[in-house]
Image 1 (cartoon, one colour):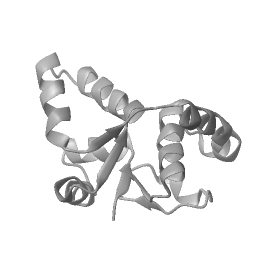
Image 2: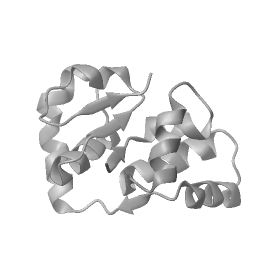
Image 3: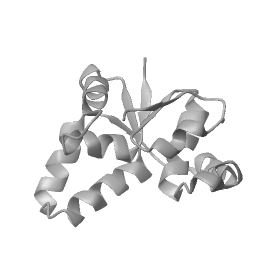
Length: 128
């Protein structure tokens, strides 16, 4: 089954953190999607940890996940999700990921435990 990966889950896989096996399995099976906003978040974190531009590009290319553009419908939904997620402190990138999953009717995989209590009508899988 296809899943939408949050940047926290992908970063856990890149850095070999707890729960990474679930993310790697989704990536290797070709059943993973990453929104373009989350792709930007991943690239940003890699830069912050000292990756060169070439290393960032290579790491992102190696993910093999289908990256979806962030379009108007998703942007509006991410904004609307602020009400339902404010208590959990979710960022724009996190809400963009949830919007992607909601619009596609897909489960979402994250490393962020704050998502566990969300009741948005989609399955949220927390990897740690």
